[in-house]
Image (tube, rainbow, N blue to C red; front, top):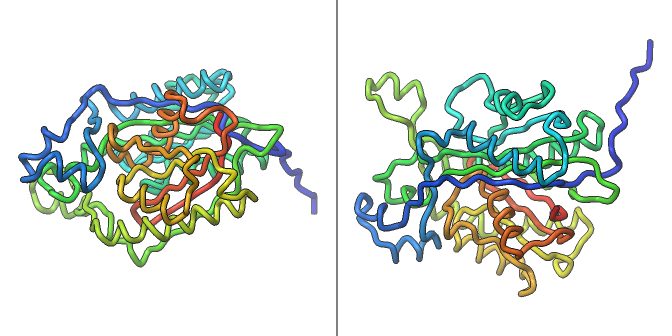
Length: 333
């Protein structure tokens, strides 16, 4: 039997550049409250959200992804033709097939990069970073573009008191490539399918068609059990990611959790006993919950505002429908 040759990748991987796109349409709580018989005060107490971004018809999943990606590629200092693989995390590309990643790769001018979508809801971006790191280190790709993008406004029931004020739109991207020092730690990931129904699309597409009503399916969430699970179980996952990366909580500079709810973010920080020196992402107040896009958007804001600087050690923790989760320690580019 002839022995197969193996690929030789980089010793280490790192995030080389981050980019973001925030839709132009700003929706303050005042525009939400009447339809759900609520108030600005109630929404802020429950979620910490003051406003969110919803996309205009022109701000498609493709358009937002390309804009965020171009920024990430430029900041990484590479040419689009150096991108070998494009991974898109999304639940709101509403064409079952083909993957939007292939169109993004073409629009960016890559040299026929491998391209595919993944569906891990709010945990999708961290799943993508984990895969990209492994691709680079295994030699399957030298530069991988990871995108988290959502147009959740398409799937939001504006009359649902439990979710109408939460979900939002946007795109974030990161270029992962080779590094001389470790820049992406081992991933801690998993799922709990027993809690499949806690966050989900309410209607099956087939049921929508059978009903004869021209209406989009909507996202629904059981808020209290999700809050309990995320606040405490995910703090343990975050600690495991620190342990696997070989660092202590005192070594951490930045904490970027999924921007699900400000109360969850605060509860996780308390549960992990984060030192006061750790800067915590709180992008949700101005952006809302953008699912797979939330972590790259939040990290980009921290970099732009000087809360995260190049070389900082950051912990990413993502969690969402499935229930699915993923966490890793990264070096801020």
